Image (tube, rainbow, N blue to C red; front, side, top):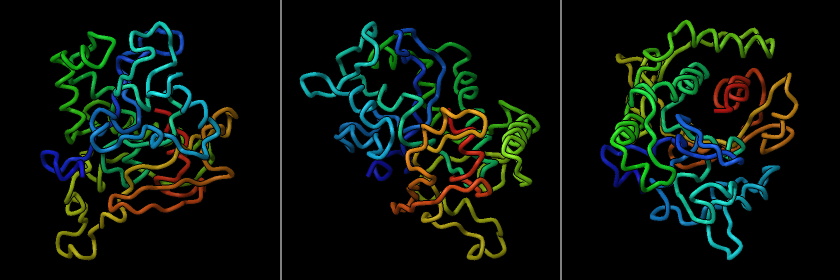
Length: 285
């Protein structure tokens, strides 16, 4: 429904939590966080904020209580010093690192595209703004900043990640993750469909994924094969606490595809994206 009414059929953009506050009330800036940007869809398309929470997540109750006021209304309750405390700021929904679902708004069809995206989005947003681009502590005042308008536009636009982090640097990020898991796999830094650009999810984008122009039928990827959102799978062979961010133990996650169907994929370190070791390692954005 959102895509049918948005310009160019573009899907909602990734959450930009650049003016959020942590549990102590300290303001955090320049932080793009994997998730749907709630003001794009709430309350017109999604009216129940519980949909941002996986019922099987080990922290489901904690996430729910953080967005419920004593009177039962939706609100922010994490930081009493936050000006939006006991009020609802839609741009804050899903901002926690421990949030249930990952969504980036770009067509990520491989481990290489995923790492290229996750390790450049923040730099990209900050570069577009030319540095610090926050002026307020609530949704209304913050979105009035003209630099924020530029960032919003950027996060709704295709971009080349290697302009913000070199391909060699991204490849080093990939190799770091593979070495940590001791995986003899070949994964290369790339954008969508093996190109350099990361392309926004939008209606008809599957035509961009044709890999053989001389035989489009054999190289086309249908919407049913384009992952757009999936459960949190964050784990590390060296940091036990990250295993607590695995929604479905002993291992696996539900993956929502562009055509609307959902599949449960079992986690295996040798998998390719999205239920892969590199996603589990770098998916803490």
